[in-house]
Amino acid sequence: MNHPSRRQIVSAGAFAAALGLCKSLSYVGPAWGQKTPDPPRGFYTYKVGAIQVFALYDGIWEKPHDPGFIKNASIEETQTALNNAGLPTEFVSIPLTVVVLKVGSTWVMVDSGSGGGQWQPTAGRLAANMRAAGIDPHKISIILISHFHPDHIFGLMEKGSNAPVFPQAELVVSATEYKWWTETGRVEKLPEARKALGQRINAAFPGWKNFTLVDHEREVAPGIRLIDAPGHTAGHSVFHVSSGHHQLMISNDTAYVPALLGPHPEWQGVYDQDGPLAVTTRRKLIDRVIAEKMMICGAHFPFPGLGSFVKDGSGYAFTAATPVTDKKPGLRPYPG
Ligand SMILES: [Zn+2]
Image (tube, rainbow, N blue to C red; front, side, top):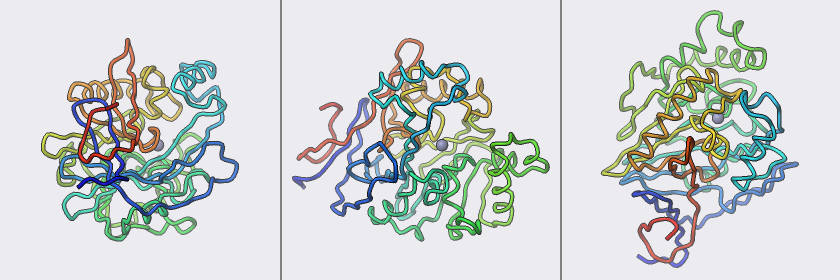
C-alpha cells in the first residue's frame, strides 16, 4: 500500500504516530492582521492503535506581551524562552488545535474550539477544517470537555443566542468543573475579566439536558479515561487514550504553550486559576508521559499539536511531531 504522497507524522519515543493522507485540501486565507502563516494543511490524522485521531486547526492568537502574563517571569524571560523554541518574540504564539477521535464507529470530540472566532478573530477555522477532514459534526456523539475557558467551550454555543451547537452529543465534564462555574454566587466572586464568561456559562449550560458530570476518574468513552488535572481550573481534566499498547495523553491546557512551560514548568500563568497546584499537576502529568513513553498532545501545542517530552535539568524539553513526507507506509522513529 505504498502511496507516493502519503504523509506521516513521527516523533520521539517508542510510539510513533502515522498521519493518513487526505487529498482534499482546504484553503483559508490568513486572518486579518495575522503575522503567523497558516499551516500548509488545516488538519492531520494519525492512529493510536485502532483509534484514529484527527488534529484540526482552529487558528492562532498572537497574544501581545503583558507583564502580568506569567506571575513569576518577566517579559524578557518569556521572550528568551520563545526565541529558544524558534518562535517569534514580538508576541506569544497561542495556536488552538481541536482533537476528534474515531473509536470504532463512535465519533468523540475533545472540547469544541472557539466557535468561529468568538474567542479571538484569528481562531475560527475549526468548522472548515472539520469539513475538509470529512467529519460530519452531526455524527459526533460524545464531547469530552476539559474545562470551561472560552477557547474550549465557545464552540458549544451559538454566537448571540447561546443555543446549543451539538444538542445530539453527550457533553462529558468533571463534576467539579461544572459545579464550580455554576454554583450560586460564583459570577459575583469571579475577577472582573472572567465575569462575562461566568454569566454566559450560567445563561446557557444549566438549561441543557445533555451534560454528564463525572465525579471520579473513569472511562468516559471506549479506551478513553478522564483524569483529574486541576490547577488551570478547579476541575480541569485530561484524557488518556489507549488502544493495544499505544497510548496518547490529551493534555489540554496542562502544559499550555510548551515553549514556555517545558523549560519552565514552575511558571505560573495568569491563565492558571491556582498557580502552585497547576505546577504540581503539570510536573506529575509530564513525568508520567515520559515514564510511560507516551505521545502527548495539547490544545496550545504547535499545530498539529502532538509531540513528546524528555527531562531536561529541572524542566522538560519538548519535541513537536512534525509532518514529513515518506513514501513508505507504516511507522518509523523520529527523526527517521
Ligand atoms: Zn486553552
